[in-house]
Length: 289
Image (cartoon, rainbow, N blue to C red):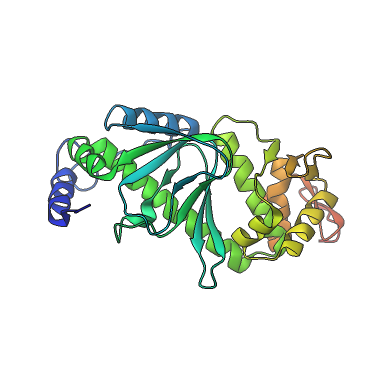
């Protein structure tokens, strides 16, 4: 597919300078609106897409490829249901999971630069994806500045999530990385109005290790540490299902393992576990932190 870069740049410049966009900055009234609830944001974005660009709906089965590395970029995709992993081929031929995506997430940004997908997107469970032809999407963005703004927002969100994952892999301990992975998954479900006290991972521990940059054994040790701390549990019938017993405590676990002093400061009125000891803060007395 031939992409007219000059035409795109002209269109973006015209839209960016248009008075139809909310005015901010010098000489104009700046907007200071609170960020919308994520569930509302996702619903609004999906509605905007349906009303702006032709949508081709596709039902996914577990293991189905949304697209494969090396294929020419024809569509961008928006996940409407289910979960999809994006896999990049490592130099030794192994697949490296680089992201896990849920309802409202966009897929295919990796293909824009070279007009070919750099990664493969694979369904983790049954779901539905919306295919948007890239040329039709560009034309719709030219006609509707709000759609262009939504597209840029999702690109930024995707980049920020990648940077957060990289930072986690470089700075957190094994157990904290596993805790962060589970917390992010549970929060993603909660933000979409879904049940978050039980996570059906649809991923093996080896795949989780690939995503987090650790071995299968390290993932198992991290899960065991979380279970001993009573913040997660295991379904005896379905071993891949993780029970989130206390989501706030899961976040506390990350802070305690990463920075015990910061964890105590973060919740001054609570009692939290720190290095296996009970610490009380906020009453003037403290245990061993």
